[in-house]
Image 1 (cartoon, rainbow, N blue to C red):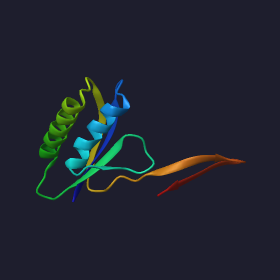
Image 2 (cartoon, rainbow, N blue to C red; image 1 turned 135 degrees about the vertical axis):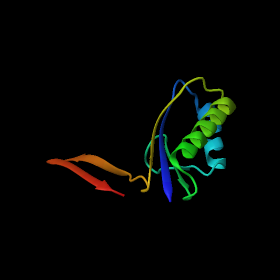
Image 3 (tube, one colour; image 1 turned 60 degrees about the vertical axis):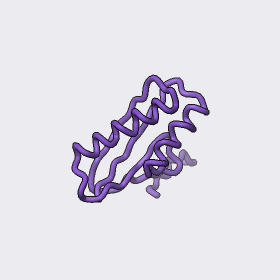
Image 4 (tube, rainbow, N blue to C red; image 1 turned 180 degrees about the vertical axis):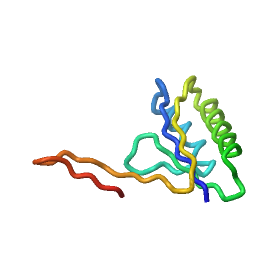
Length: 101
């Protein structure tokens, strides 16, 4: 399997635009990572290679931006063999507690 993780910045988007944008991602089988703002992941089978995954990302982002009427979407994409990990760092007395989920 190959995974793609997207971190998105939807510049100046209101709540309705975000909802419409996210709906397009969900229809295309993207999954929002829990507890992280605007980070999504999708799993591709082994028939997809990096250039075809990049084309799929471009297509879904353009479709979502058009549907939601968002003028600018800035993103970071990571494509690889491992799924994304999430976690958290919390300030506690005497330092921090950090863990991966």
